[in-house]
Image (cartoon, rainbow, N blue to C red; front, side):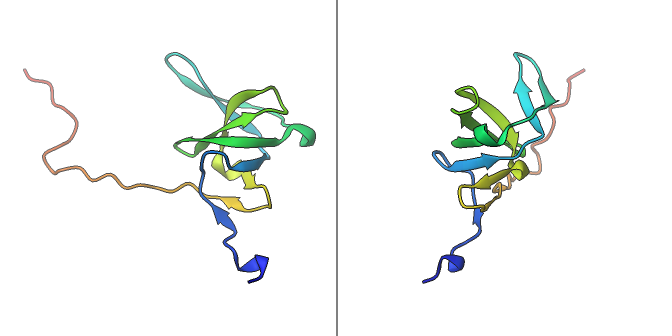
Length: 105
């Protein structure tokens, strides 16, 4: 079987090596989240996914950059061999009577 027959898409998973081509990063504070511009140099752009994802962002351990974990957009990541990283969407079904809680008067 040729190498081209393999899927060119990967789902985020723990231990997956990725190339980071990010222009922005999510920064999680105690009570808020902000998105800031970043520059990741080619020599330090390889990381390893922790397996944690959140609304279009993945946590990546950046050993060559600073040894810390960073949250980058899924679209700005590529697999070790150029594969596209895709985030799996899991639908959540709510019962019809479940919804925002209404305040009682």
